Image (cartoon, rainbow, N blue to C red; front, side):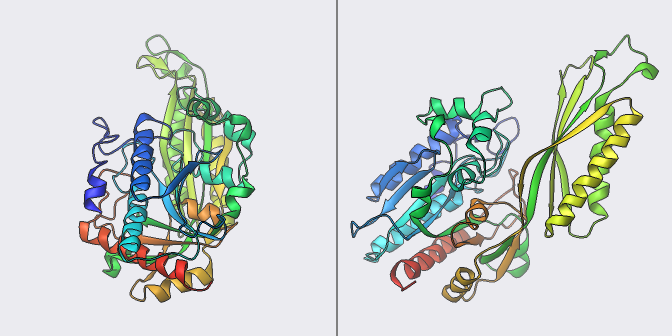
Amino acid sequence: MADLLREIGTVGTDPARGGYSRPGYSDAELTLREWFVDHAGRRGLDVDADRNGIVWAWWNPTGGPLHDAVVTGSHLDSVPGGGAFDGPLGVASALVAVDRLQAAGVRPARPLGLAVFPEEEGSRFGVACLGSRLLTGDIAPERAAALADPDGVTFAEAAARHGLDPRHLGRDRAALDRIGLFVELHVEQGRGLIDLDRPVAVATSILGHGRWRLTVTGQGNHAGTTLMGDRRDPLVAAAAMVTTVRDIAAAVPDARATVGRLQPVPGGTNVIASAVHLWLDARHPDDAVTADVVAAVHDRARSIAAAEGCAVQLVEESRSPTVHLDRALRDRLSGILPDAPLLATGAGHDAGVLSAHVPAGMLFVRNPTGVSHAPAEHVEDADAESGADALAAVLLDLLTAST
């Protein structure tokens, strides 16, 4: 595991933010895809990409149809300035698990698929798990095609530059039907395994979450000639909204709400902004409570904007309900890995999107810092090996035992 991850240790490093910036369809993410394709080929896997940009590698020694397959994998893109393991750990673990099985002389009775999903983080086009959402039909292809990055490049344009036909984006029943079940390994993005003192856990649920964009509009003007009392400054209103988000979420048990991105327009040092976009991430185990938190934020934001002579608009960009992963598969994973505790997560994953369509489960690997989506994210070499061993054990059982 350490050797495999070391091969990509310099891809997408971000000297300004620290960590890694590997947005979807960037040079860094495309380089990582090439790395995966190369390693899949070395293992004798058949590689193809589907019409939504998901890369598949297949181990199918019987030569039978690709149906009822066991599928594992993750993503290779990152948040801006993210850690080294969020995504790549799951992809590298899948490759090493294949090594384990092939070295043991395993001949699977059903196909094994390795999948790399694009734009899982949504850091470029704003919608998380975009590849799996397109595959399952959970996002309209017209909406996905029109999503634009901060430079104004649409997803359709980016996809077309890399061999996809935007006219064919969307639900892929044939690809989905190949999946009998899906197991995703991922670095844990919290302190659960630190507190439990275990290297690997079996996931139980994924917290419901969503992203909303608040756009505050005011009057752009000159910073030097506009008196303080004459201003309608949307950035002042936006600043108050950020602290209001924190206060509203802090008053609701188990709620989490964050403003992690704020964009003034036009963004000049000596310019009073004409508009400000700020993005809200809100989460709670109860989806109705998440909706209440967002409604409270919107209501308070309107009052704050009005007090500054501004207006505000709220637009939902994505939303995922709380997911309880397939109980039968979870119990089976626990039986294969009896020392692995059960653990819920507050982070979203492709497994959560797929779970509405196929049995899906997850494994988590300990992160000794408890920090994720930041350069301090980490996995010890021994824990990475334990994760790959656990995934290999799971795949062996699922590939050779009766379903």
